[in-house]
Length: 526
Image (cartoon, rainbow, N blue to C red):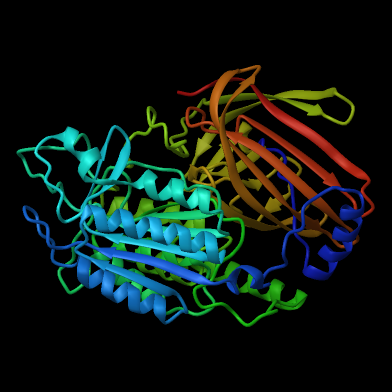
């Protein structure tokens, strides 16, 4: 990840199991599932939901929330949820329903889905869902007459049920009008509590469409995606985001925060379904072939088709970055997430800075953590930039625009891989897979499962940085052997490259192959 070394990862399942047995015996890692293995325990638990749709506001009535709530209730019943439905609820009714819902989740140890459609607002970074009887004449009325989101979130934390989904289609235009402008538009960014997914109809600080038909734009697309079989919940919301963005011409882009540890399916795959070694490799080869055909496309339709088919694909983050660029060239202005720097409820988000300039310089030191010795120091200088690549030291190193390797100094070449991505937020997960070919023609397959685990202050020789900490675990498999890989890196919004990176690799018997660190010692960005 320093640009001259990228760890490698998962082999096919049988090889993984062989390596895994030795690694577990050595106490080296946590078990990761093979691709395609259904997480049946979570998906077999009881399912409970609370759905609220508020349309009949006295001063700012809405057309669709009651319709949205009824339709969503029916959709959840179809996938075995017990549903409590509240329409045009007063504050007292909302609070009572939330209290009963939380108690039911705790009693039944159930999967929970909470859905609210209606008006919402924020005050002092706190989000409030508005009952239909809320009479708000000044901003200070909001806490006493709205229902604070934290009332629900704190109750869910106390319930200690296995998983929660919170869906807020509650970001319509300011319900108070010009007479009482809010502090900011829409809702405030919140990080999902442990074991939950928090979904907004639009990005924090923005507003959502009430829809031109019988449902709001967001819920209309969510209802359609809920009919999909064998689809992970996070993939459902990714497809919804793509469709809403396309239908609104970029004016509305849904947003999620997740801290889920397992895959959940509204319509689970068959129990025990998994891919064989050959099937897993064929699936990757098929996706790679599709990506190679469309990755340079200037037609957004080709990229959108790929993202619908592979919402969490091994090129999906790169595809999304390219789609952003293509749409911007066509005049679509991406909406911005409101700044969350002073927000006590979120670690915020960071977008990779791809604005490299000729002459940008990044100096690193390379350390052997097994011996506590410095191996070398080196400097990377940007000597050329293309539409898709950054070239360092006259071609000694080539990366894509977000730092993923394309070619190393020794001639090793990589297929595209998303070890680094464009957007970081706490809890975000993604998969990086690649195939590399070294100068001798030998090939290696690799896969790592990444997760953003923290935002923290990091002190390096180059200075102190506010950075996201990203951890990944996976495997690398060559012709003769495989290794377990643990990968760790820090990304700072103010630096265009990774500021520090560690990798640890072990054989199946637990023997350490390497344990190294690269850290920034200085940089100049033009």
